[in-house]
Figure 1 (cartoon, rainbow, N blue to C red):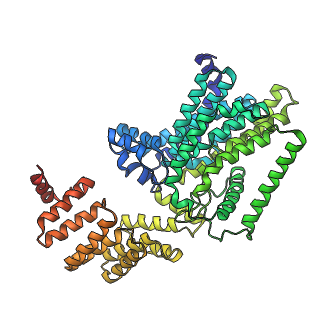
Figure 2 (figure 1 turned 90 degrees about the vertical axis):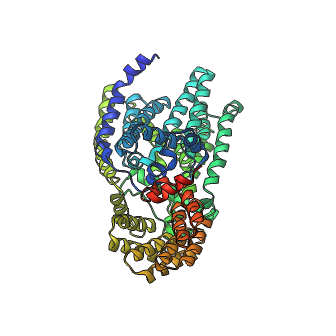
Figure 3 (figure 1 turned 45 degrees about the vertical axis):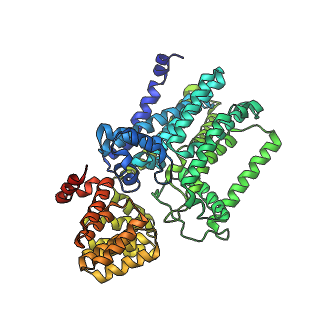
Length: 562
């Protein structure tokens, strides 16, 4: 098929998908960045702020902080080069990727066996489903959108290779797969999906099927190792039994949210003990066990072929598996909406095949009428809910308060809301949130540190020192309490004590620019000007903007520079 013919035959479906996406997300294009990874990944990320060879290659040598997403970071570098940090354009790019992905889902489902208009209805559900708003309306969801785009492109290239036997399509698929795992490591399951497609199309797997996937599996293993390195702390946080139980709960929960997408949240907490004695764990285990028994029974009765339900369920599960390494965070949570961005295609395939089976006895015109009579009200309902959900990502405060309205026991959300109020200067409101954080998690070091800073701002120095010393005792690897204690001691005239604390902060984190500035000031007050200027010089190397309000120091550094 020529490009012109392809565009002509698919213009209407692509236009319908685009209009549907705009109906959902047009208002959310005015959303701001949110302090929920957007700060560390995008606008406060040194790698995205300058388009240089060093930063370009630096994207391939860094984590975000735990995911290896160099291609995602490069996309932000390009955006900053063109438009700096104007959030609307970042949201537009996310929406464009989502529209492209929905179009690819439409093409893919046809290739997998759905009728054309059934595939369009399924792709429309993908376009407007509320569970996808997290990936689209959140700028940091870019990694999921990019990984999905390249994964879907790789799958279509592979299917084209199956038809034409042209090696160029296989290598195109491999290159797209490489881009997918460079966007987000969760795409490493794609080779297993390719084998699943082979199994579906041929009814069995052959040696040739496996051999042709060797380059894909080599990349998968490589990026699995890279990904596990960034997630070492999470992997060791839960026992294998706890991980298994949460995986079962997460799988059933994901199915529930797909079919009934109500009360969507940015965070789903696991506050109860993780034990099989609780219904929230043994019920998912039983349900999944029963599903496995049914699938095994069907294989035994009908041979080893891959039926549509089996194919769809395995697709769903395979794309969900990488999310099982995300369970342990500051809060323990077991699911995020974006985790099923690609997984849901398996469910859409099952629904599509069931629809085609139900309608096969009718003529083409009747099938079309029945299909869209059923799909239209569903799509309108999903569109309305997704539109409302996208606006809950408007800004940080809206996001935090929405999450707390659904679960008031989130340590991270109370802390983040407190930090936001703190920055705004609402000290009383910030204090309330910090105290709630500590009440829920007494060893939350950052809350103690920030509460100490807040008490200092209120002039309650003894309370400030108590909180800061508690924070420093809790976590010797956290430099901020030492720096803040040093600042208070310097204000009190205890310069020697301040120097001890500030050196302790720098010993923990040599790149802590503010600690170098404070130490430089303390050394200056002791008359150790040369040592003090060395500290200021190091601070200037780390964060030049911190010295913008210190012209005398900048001039002294310039005079000392050879």
